[in-house]
Image 1: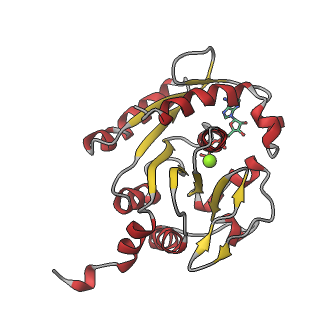
Image 2: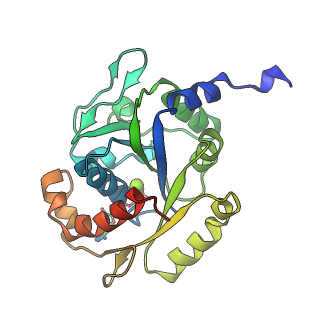
Length: 234
Ligand SMILES: Nc1ncnc2c1ncn2[C@@H]1O[C@H](COP(=O)(O)OP(=O)(O)OP(=O)(O)O)[C@@H](O)[C@H]1O
Ligand SMILES: [Mg+2]
């Protein structure tokens, strides 16, 4: 084997993730369809059920999970790596800790490198679930995650829009070919159905306040997804 092709960071990452039992990517192939809200709600729901949960915001250039949570002024502590700060019983890691309110102008290789660096230094410890909020589309980040994690499942988000459903169907073919478990979730549904979260006009007013989020219909619907993935999922 050509040693020059080996990236030692990939081995370190596998080591760092060794005690993470379940990884769920929250993915969808359009922007603004609720991936981040669902990631946060699912992480909060799992933590409420006493599960050890990590939340990783991998939407590098436009992280929003900290805004949804109202998690201001967090910063990881250093101890043989970076310890994700705990917020609402969730170990939370986001590029926003380092970029603050400036946009990160990354593309291509710099995205891959940033993801690898962060995963190399992050000490998750033992986790029942790591929820990863993904950027929209089948992006550089998606390619990296597929390469870096041995095993993961996907919460595949769409809206009731036929366009959103069609593009999702096409895009998840890659996951299906890889025999990766997929839980389809319809967000902003008109009425309650299995694996759906209804449109909730009150959700935006609850952003930044976990207590308020937990009182919304959005959160109650998201708890159905939590039960599903807690039970193994798909
Ligand atoms: N079930 C819902 N009911 C009402 N509004 C919703 C619902 N889900 C999402 N939204 C609206 O969509 C907005 C965007 O949600 P969110 O940021 O979670 O989407 P996203 O898919 O993560 O977006 P991006 O692709 O930009 O990361 C929310 O701020 C909210 O206004
Ligand atoms: Mg998002």
